[in-house]
Image (tube, rainbow, N blue to C red):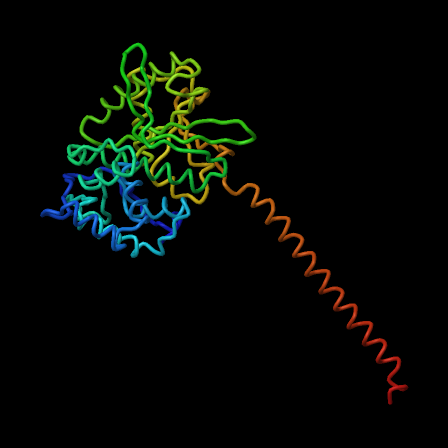
Length: 358
C-alpha cells in the first residue's frame, strides 16, 4: 500500500465534483441466509470477514484503503490490498455488503465505497453487535457520503500518526440546549491523552455541495449553542472540546472562515481551527491545523499555520534516533582513529625492528 506522504494528489478524492452521481456496483439477485450459514460452516466466511463487516458498520461508508488501514491498526493480518479486495468481493457477492462508486464529468471514480446490506445487519445482530443500519441509509446523497469518507480519513490519520492518540468516535452526538436539538459532528472525534491529561478534537467536514455556505452557518449555530452554554459533562465531555473544520482545500478554508464571520456565528469561548483533506497525508500532523488571526497592522485576517506539538507522533523517537546516530558517529570516528593509530604504531615498530627481523 502506498504511504500517505507518497500520494501526489493535488485535489482531494473526497472533494465534490461537477455533475457527480453515485452508481450502484453491488450484486443483484437473491442470497438466502442458509447459503451464508453454509459458507460460514465450511470456512469461506471467517473471523476476518466479520472484522471487516464490523468496521463497515462502525463507519457506515468506507473505502477499501481505509478498511486496510483500520485492520492493520487493529493488528489483523490481511496480507495486502488485493487480498482484502478479494474478501470484499466475497462479501458483496453474498449481499452482506454492497458497493458504490462515483461518476462525474471528470470520469469514473478511482475508489469504491462499501456499506452494509440486509444480510450484514442480520449477521451482526446474531453476534450481539449493535447495528442501526437501515436500507434507506444507502440512499444518502454524494455529499453526505463524501463527508463521512473525509471524516474517516481524518480519524485514521490521527490514530496512526499521533502518539497521544487515545480513542475515536465516528459519529459523536451533541446537544444544542437553547435550540433543543441533538446533532452529530460529520467528521467524528478523537481523544488525545498525554501525561494523564486529555483533550478531544471534534471534526466538522464541509463540502462544496449545493448551498454549502447556508448549511455551514446552520451547523455553526448549533455548535455555538453547544459551546457557549457548555457545562462539564455535557454530551459526555469532561472538558470543552476543540472544534476543527475539515475543508476540501485551502481556498475553502478561507471561504468557510469568511462565511462564519459574515454571518456572526463565531464561537466566543474557543479558537476555531481549520484543516484540509490532503493535509492528513502529511508524515506528521503537528503543522496541519490553521487559524485565521487578525493582523494588527492591516486589520485584515490572515491564515496562519499553527504548530500543535501534541500531534507529533515521533518526537520521542526522533530524540532517541538523534542520540543513537550521534553515538554511532562518534564510535565510528573513534574506531577509525584507533585503527590509524594502531597502523602508525605498527609501522614504527616494524621499521625500527626491521634489522632484527632480517
